[in-house]
Length: 91
Image 1 (cartoon, rainbow, N blue to C red):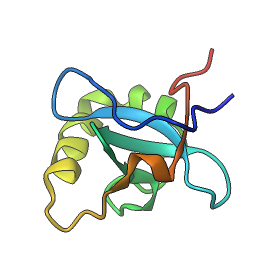
Image 2 (image 1 turned 180 degrees about the vertical axis):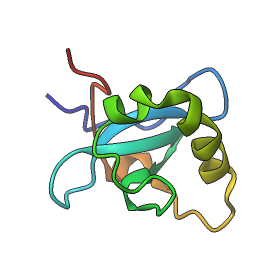
Image 3 (image 1 turned 90 degrees about the vertical axis):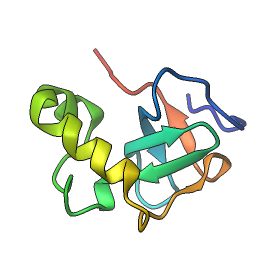
Image 4 (image 1 turned 120 degrees about the horizontal axis):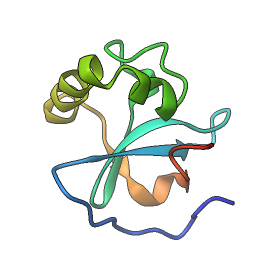
């Protein structure tokens, strides 16, 4: 069941991984930074990663890429309220 009324998320660090549905075809990997969210599945640097689990499987290589994406001033962050959030990792 998605969380649909989240306004801000407190987390360690500058950003956190999330699984989010932006209403465009199902959940995708995303970055959350407090009250904003970024769809990383739409970024060329992370294209092909359809799930958070896929990103975690290649964490050593993906971490610096995600950090660069999060710091990119051209990134189009949306209000966190624009997405429904799901548990990022499923067993």
